[in-house]
Image 1 (cartoon, rainbow over the protein chains, first blue to last red):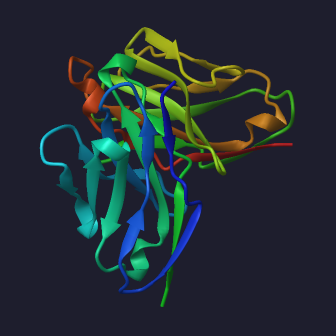
Image 2: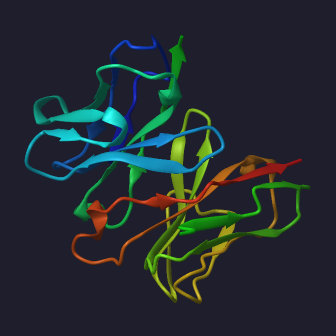
Length: 114
Length: 117
């Protein structure tokens, strides 16, 4: 069965430091990959998505993610974190074989130290 | 530009009570879905609908009922609430299903926090 793993439950970084959030998936074929962000008390907002083509995708708020087929990974990065980036981040995957269903990872909570 | 609207924002129920969580979207999206969010488990799909009159089960459908009489609305019914249904519920929608609907992003409501005592 398809699955999505986000190995880090919590991550704390200092403001201005770089960030990498990990996401690994288990699928039979290359899936469609998404990163969402959830601020406290809010719904999820799409940061970026990968379907095909260039494996480095740019998103909103200065985030980027790189798809690595050999590692079944889609890690999210940001060169310099701002205090407003503190939130929970979810990786999600979908594929035409599984119809309309998106599978979400368990989430990573990002804390930013000033 | 309302997007996806969920009501209520908070609800407390006693075990055995029933209630309906409301979800409405104004983007003419044919696909709508309900997720529950629990700590350490991410979001799990409860039910979804690909258009008016069409619904299907997701990963965790037991104890929940849905209907889709209009494109705009997709209510979620708890038939007899149980403490295990204490969670945050999200409604989400996306563009018209088709050959490429599986790669279109979901638009989320702000959630309903439900506590069952």
